[in-house]
Image (tube, rainbow, N blue to C red):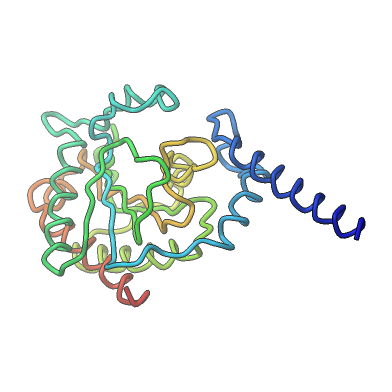
Length: 250
């Protein structure tokens, strides 16, 4: 009997210790952007045992890159000045917002719940698919093309499928060429909404996510698509998202 009481005490003490440890384990920008600390992976693996997708219709989040960037919280204060690319009178943030709004319209017509997000992500935000919309700019006006990236650490094992569906739809419908692979930067793969172990204002690790660079606002051929005909890239992105949701039976 004493042994059972002792074992029960040990179990309760262990459970309490784990709870306290996880409860006070908080993200910190000081952590490595490219590697998830072991403690956070332990936390994730425990949450995964009990996590279930919220019931209801499919949900999609579209982030407008750089929108209201000055409102980022202190943990992301170093990014507040990053207002996006500019070329002449063209501002990236406006291109991003126009395309994002049109993507949302397309999806809502098919009864898909859509949330438009600014630069700041609600803490632990979950969606069945998250797509951050950006556009590029470069002093070399001949550089053009579309590119995208998924998180360095995709714990959902679904972001690569989302990426494939959107990439195929985008390149096919817009006729745009893919940008050179070396232009897909670590900043894209370690994009702050993906870094849930570094920032409180980041996505849930259970959210399939990607970032797209729709083209170069500094290139005239890309401008024709993303600036002068934004419905085209928006429809392509929405189509890719819908393909993905259908594959996931959502």
